[in-house]
Image 1: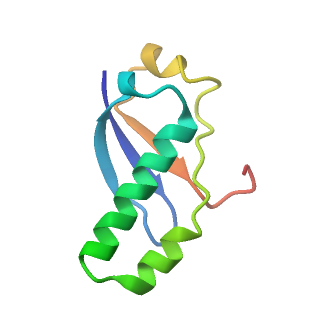
Image 2 (image 1 turned 120 degrees about the vertical axis):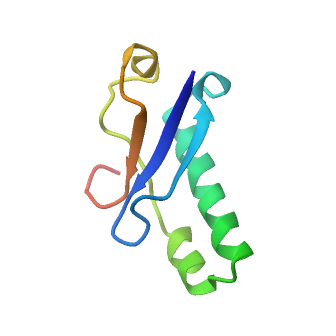
Length: 87
């Protein structure tokens, strides 16, 4: 099942990627995946100061109670935020 992972953050809002969520089993795996992709993008494009800031991100999702809810949802975008006290 294809979904869009998108970061919701002051600096990195809008960074996204498309993934097949059936290849993963947790929100932690998805948050690590998008963070890794962001870091690769920033480093590949020599945006080193932004990469240092991205390293500090503690991404989480709080729109779903459990991972299986993603399969029941009609939402195409799964947001991962870092700007609240939920972590």
